[in-house]
Length: 109
Length: 109
Image (cartoon, rainbow over all chains, first blue to last red; front, top):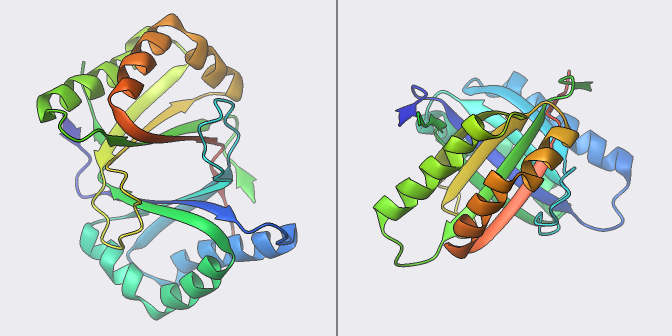
């Protein structure tokens, strides 16, 4: 099994609280994306709404994926004041959240 | 907000049942990866173990990401006999699972 050297993906699954306006959600997502400009080890960001049809999404409605060069980079990001401020705002709008970091590994079969 | 044309990411979070041997888990992951060879619309596969330190992983231990060219491609994959067989095996070894599909979107800020 082959590991992409050093790359760490930081995946956030979120369910926003009921009643939060769509434009507030958009504003929050832009704030998340803007962390790329503020926190050096954060290398990329993308997101999407759940469009699955298997009904195994457990109520989660949004997913956010950012990339880092190392787990140390993720730790620096987590502790960064810009992230702390954003996370306080973000989490206050969520009903539930899951965060997973992983080093993407391909499998040759 | 700019959407990568047509690409759909299929993300599976899993927690294996306690007591399942590590080599059984490896065998299952190889079976997952091998679906790329069997199901045409599945374009890539990678996976990783959770290495997060924020303690927001809710017990999930593994994440799997595959890519498709469209939501129709995901639907074809879900219904494919090779996937049905694999999913029956896979799910029987899991304590919990979340599946989310999304069209990755970048945000310019």
